Structures are given as C-alpha cells and as structure tokens.
Length: 202
Image 1 (cartoon, helix red, strand yellow):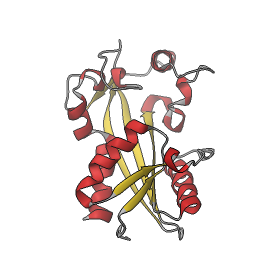
Image 2: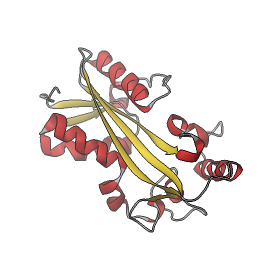
Image 3: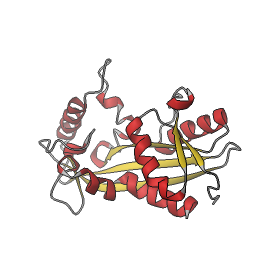
Image 4: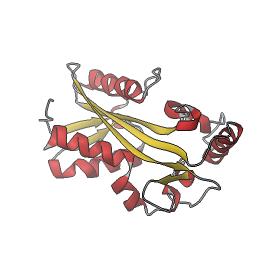
C-alpha cells in the first residue's frame, strides 16, 4: 500500500464541518488539509451503486483536477431487513426538493420495516468508505462499520441524520443520545480513519 508522503491533502468535500474534523485527525502527521470549495471544485455526480464506487468518483475527480492527493468518503446506513437500503441512497431518502428532512427519512425507514414485518432486533450498520487517490490514478480504500439496530421512537437530539433511531451494539442509548466525542470515537468513520492512518500515515 502506498504511503502518503506529502504535506498537503485535498479533502473532496464542500462540508466545512467534515473538513475540520478530518484536518484535526491528520494534524499530528503534519498534513495541511484543503477543501474542495476552497479550490472552486464542483461536486461530481455520484453515479455508482456502492459506497466505494461513489467515494472513488469524488477522490479521483479531485486528484485529477488539482494534481493533489485527494481523500473522499461515502457513507450511509444499511438495514438488513430492507436488503441493505437505504445504503448509498441514505441522504436521498431525506430529500424534499428544497432541503433534507431526516425526521421524514427516519419515519419512512420505520414504516418500511413495519410493512415488511421485520423481526426484532432490526439489525443495521452504519458504513463509511474512505478513498485516498493520487493524481496518477493509484488509490487506497478503507472501510469502517458500526453495527447496531434500529429502534423507535426517535431518541436524542445529538448527532445528525439517522442517529436518533440507531442504537450501536454494546450501548443502551442511540447515537442521537450519545455525546458526540464518544460517538466520534466508536463510529464507522472512526473505524475507517484508524485503518487509513495505519495504512498510509504511520
């Protein structure tokens, strides 16, 4: 696996919070992170039906456009009884046309589980795939998973997305009830980042 040897990394996201989170994780390795919006990059269409496919699209497009190594992620929640849905369409389930409504998305999730008469526990996994791509086309892939179950009603106001209906294994509270630092320590994204740092930065 190729090691990251430079001191500047393009993070292929327009999300300021995500950029700051990644920059903090990589700060001990003397890496300066720059976001896609700072370089005026457009977001490419995510046309794949897998997390790794969409992360690769974003990472390689950014690396080709700038000549910098680029890191991209794709993530979502996969529910066993819904045959892995919403999966790569996790955010799409929250689209209303003008904004994202995750309360509506969580309600839809529960209603579909009810229609399917899904047995308890209603198993699910939060998944995160990171792709680090170099301008010459080489890439490295790291996948993180946080297993758990879907619960109802929604619980907690921390986190974001589907967190209030996801109870991670080993805990009696949902991600929505969990302190964000605790969540960040055990999450699917944390799992993927541990593998990234071990594989390319240490």
